[in-house]
Length: 143
Image 1 (tube, rainbow, N blue to C red):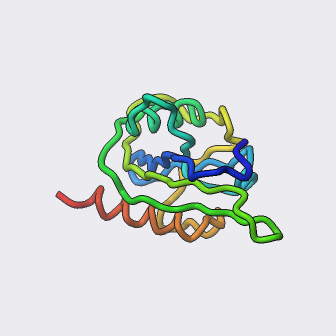
Image 2 (cartoon, rainbow, N blue to C red; image 1 turned 30 degrees about the vertical axis):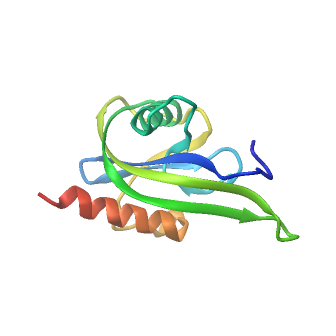
């Protein structure tokens, strides 16, 4: 865990589509433990963003993906009760397509689901996650 970092950490978020569904995971660890989100995690030293995306999705959901273009970059900053930064992630979100495998909750994920991007209300997603999914859908549907 990276509570109270001295600098932002780089995370990779992955908007994975399979047909008309988007992959969501219920986080099994802080930050945002128990909340639904996109699969992803910290980028390792020497690892390219696409490699981090492939690894994280394989670890969290057990599937193989093909990584596409950048969707956006988001700052995820969480303060504690005293107002001190407890977590700070710079999230590089990428678009990806499912290629093979059946989803199963793995590393850091308590649960996984293929969700209808038009009906995300039951997942109570962070507003930025909803925005990223909408942007990814626009990029995916452009010729």
